[in-house]
Length: 353
Ligand SMILES: Cc1ncc(C[n+]2csc(CCOP(=O)(O)OP(=O)(O)O)c2C)c(N)n1
Ligand SMILES: [Mg+2]
Image (cartoon, rainbow, N blue to C red):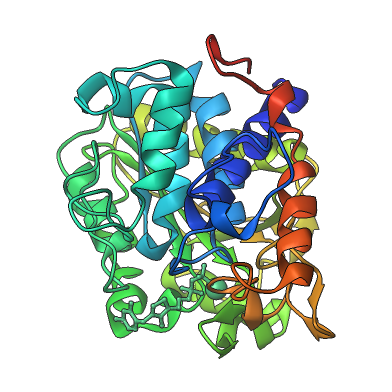
């Protein structure tokens, strides 16, 4: 695992997200931003995007080296700029998009200018985006879709990111039951990842306010082995090792999925496993990652005295007056500069990741 490469990729994707949300010019910050460089109507969702970039970078680094048949399903489809950024970095967009056949810089301009624009790119994940099978806009279906895609395809590995607000929907919660029907050697491996950023639109999430043990018990009760991580490459990697070894064993066994059901007593607890992460001690159940991040991490901490990063105010556009307010514009300049994107991207050669 190359931790530095993962971190660089997250920086590049985060930058591209912010550029899509705000910029209509000066995409590489070649001069100080002016109001003219800012889009007239600021739309989109920043808060979820950093966590999506973290999950994507870690999953890609791990599975690229291991399996050809890996898919990522995004539940919070309002984080589309992050999906777009990652597909752009991977070259997947320019493989199919006839508008992206120019130089790397021309292509970057194209995706940023046309984000959330009529006739351009959508604001939410949509079928026009290569690989998308879960349309954004209505939360709740991602987990069911992940199990559906895995049915009858033991060669597939599918990771699915669920928002913690999404996790409150009846659809998502009831889909947790599918683990009992689908985790078998006849089907693919499904890795649910709960993105515990603590907030949804304008308030806190239930899971974000639950005690850790309550959340663990809930997930355990559906028949999973909950594993809590932050987004750091180390912890992510170790959680993925647990996942891989669980399914390797399941797929190699005779199909008998020895799970916790029927066992009496409380043979589980919060233990540190052989990979050095906290999980149930004795469970034989499939892993379920809980990834705790700060909502809108990397973005503005405070705006006009109000806490933004790590709060619901990071959900949509954290600098809504950037087009007219010099203070917000300068905060945006500072934010974008913090990614040092010119270390990661060359206008002619493309990504230097
Ligand atoms: C079924 C449904 N209900 C409500 C909404 C409105 N909505 C859009 S984003 C959002 C918050 C999502 O929060 P969360 O799942 O925690 O995602 P985050 O942005 O925090 O990653 C909601 C409720 C929706 N898209 N779908
Ligand atoms: Mg959330």
